[in-house]
Image (cartoon, rainbow, N blue to C red; front, side, top):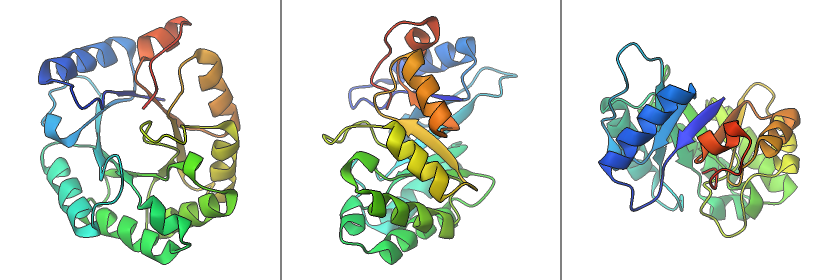
Length: 214
């Protein structure tokens, strides 16, 4: 269920190679990296997926730019795209604009590419979370995702995950941002998470404190 994640701005290609090796060893579902790290080589015979962020971390890119970024990432081998919405549009209640933004990325990265929509749930009220989740569903997304892990408002919460899962039960829910321990991971899964974004996967799986969980 884990997307083994490395999104630090100072990450190097050597760091990503180490991430991939660790992900293969641990048996995580995927690695999640920045688009400039592509292409990523996975071990031969491995079913490890490659997830890539888009419009990250602010979401304030234009839809055309997000679509181009997603399309290039797919061309370079991305299996999954984790895009950030325009959180300000959601705060203004412009959910049709949020839907159009997501739809542009969906069109640029059609199935079988998996599209996850990062809603930055800690910055939104409940009604706004419901609105953006419905927009993601209407635009053809596969997942809604809590957080970038970079926003000052915070990361995933059980409440947000539960609300997201209840709003769009047909979609997956990815909890990311602050998932550092096995206890936290299990709480998110009980709340409805079907995927976890974790930067310190080894520590989490061994029972110790993990990284920030981007």
